[in-house]
Length: 245
Image (cartoon, rainbow, N blue to C red; front, side, top):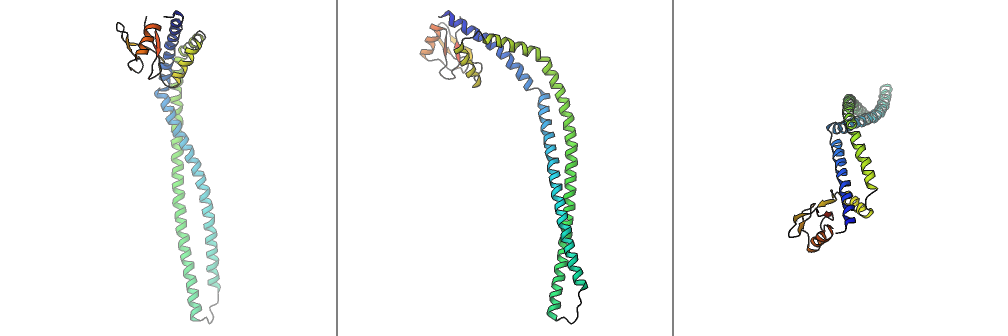
């Protein structure tokens, strides 16, 4: 068993212990209820802000609709005035029928204009209601976000010294690690195969082991490497397996 290799693995295991502690602390911060509430209320505030933006856009469309309606009504009123000021004279029956047809058309247009006015009124009411609700929701979400942020910040502050110490320790330990082992460690960590270094499980007397990570029984070659060199790689999960001395 190469003593130098075993010392390098021991250092890597010490590094991993610190790494696990830091990851646990990070997990605590990331799963903090206050942080979850922060994100939830931020989304609620952003949604309310978007609703207000949409309401502004709809209000602009409403103004355009009202302007078109005014123009439409003015044109109808001008047409009606034209009919009212026209001299009937000795019009033929066909001419009178045509005039009545046009008057009926004007009447229908005024009815259509009245419907459009009701639609505009209903839509403006909905826009105002939606806007007011969005303002109210946004204010509540903003306050809740601020409260949650204060709580989360307090938790982060309470863990800051511990986290900074772990980060400093890891930085110093990393300088002492074997480069190849450390590269493999980081690759496995990035692949979510954590912990990258595991202890062998099994029967010391028989020299038959399982991977301490995925639990798979090691093949003959893996068992031989563990017995002779004190470590091997798992064929299944590729973790670094170490046999306890």
